[in-house]
Image 1 (cartoon, rainbow, N blue to C red):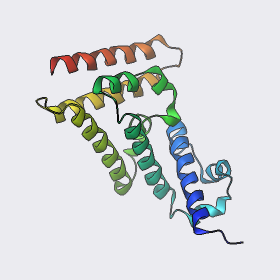
Image 2: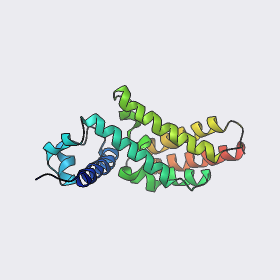
Image 3: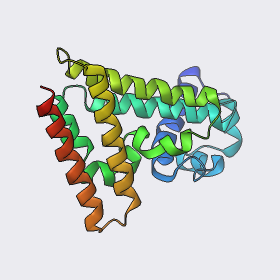
Image 4: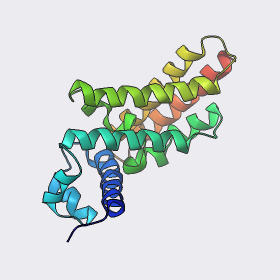
Length: 186
């Protein structure tokens, strides 16, 4: 039985959405095609009707994750982005969090064309922060510094045991430092 183009697109979008969450939660190597397709309610063999390879899916899922992140913070002031990003809720919601914090270490080992997707996503995050800092001197450099510290804070906090006081201390210290940097460069 053949499916309609609309149903095929719906299935494709569902696979990408599920993969975007599962990759952020478990990492690229922690998600097999068979497991992913089972969660999507589709057959393992159907994967290749949608994607040429797992790397092609990784690229689409990463793009989706970066779009979700950009949309989540679109109406926030820069200080509010810092508070929401460098937080325990973001740290603990790996599957819904920013792909930069969840997957950058793994993305560094991917082929260049897949890494390019991460580069574009990260550049988009810089651009959004830079826009929020418009009118300030060195807005671009400041945006890069803030995002690098925010991502690093989440990554380091996630590396600590969940109940660890160090995990919270990293978030609290970096969040305060980012706010101080905003004040200094105002």
